[in-house]
Length: 538
Image (cartoon, rainbow, N blue to C red):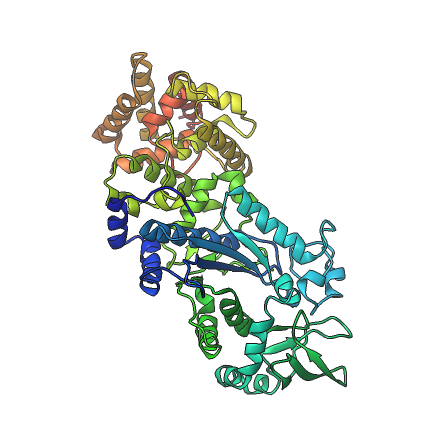
């Protein structure tokens, strides 16, 4: 929680803001009008939780919940000034159900199917277990972003006895939980369903078998394992719970006040909420967000590995642009693939540039307010990321950072990586994006006869431009040529499209005035000459 004082103006604006984090935070304000209190009457932190299943490598969809939940957490702090906590919970006591497609040593993993993930060897041979490996990857990324969170391991909670009282409560409410769950299951599943999954003392596998409660207060159950009837305590790691029951038990044991979930878990939220009430507790507030889709429109899956990895986004775009993309329209399905990164970077920068001059109500609705927790610096960039991509596109796959900065100084005299550290990061992103995705696809087409005439006129006019001609001056030249009926363009966009395809080898592009000013008039004239050389003879 921030120690900074919260202004009354900000609080009043937040109380009526339509930005979704404030709408979510107001649910908690309604839940605790006078703040959350502990059993001793003292003010207690409101507890936010995010859940993570470490059965596959973390991806942006996994990270998304922590980012969005943090935004709601900060909004609640702005509204109330009250203390909060964020728990990142790993369900690493879960059994390995299938071998992920995107990890090594798959034959080895197949030998451990059904065992708790913390008992499955790490296929990367770096950590104590597969869960420890994936948990470490998750925490490393959350740490990189500077999230304020507490990592909690399901295995440690079960085995350490912290869930024991809640587990006894599950056994006491066993029939009530069965009455909630059985109507939601297929008839054949009803015959074997149990809220409790004992860990086999023989194989170490998390068993899916019917269970009989022997003594709820002692935590004793009876079940059959490989033909043998066994009585075993479910306490201190002797069992885990079925997913929906486990979720509800966790809410109760930890005192969770807020947890969001994907749209695919609406049924789970409904059933887990009923179970939490059967256990004598109030389920947390939250909402269901839409899922990210890959470029084929398919749901992103950890086991398939068909989504972007965290490192992929950071190779081609900024950290802030990732958080910005995650903020936008959480209840709308969005594609999440390499192609969305350039637009996300430029949209983020545009919102950031406008933040400083906005009234407070507009600031609270600006995505960057939530990306940065209300602390948005007022620096701006001299060029857009899209313009950078066009620049490195014409420079070729072998372009270097030093060469890019030389061009940038045409546009912003004296510009350096030291003066523009964020731009320095985007230069590296642009070079990587160009190398891997733009350079292999660029193909300049020859201009048509009327396009060639227009290009010759453009060449002549920029050649005659004064040395101090601005990007806007050059843009006006481009406009006037495109509007001149002599060159036969039905619409101005046809002229722009011709410039992009003949000079840049792309279907879309930047403001040409800005590009020419950045690339330099002499270099731009060389591009025009190359295009005109491609015009067929005769």
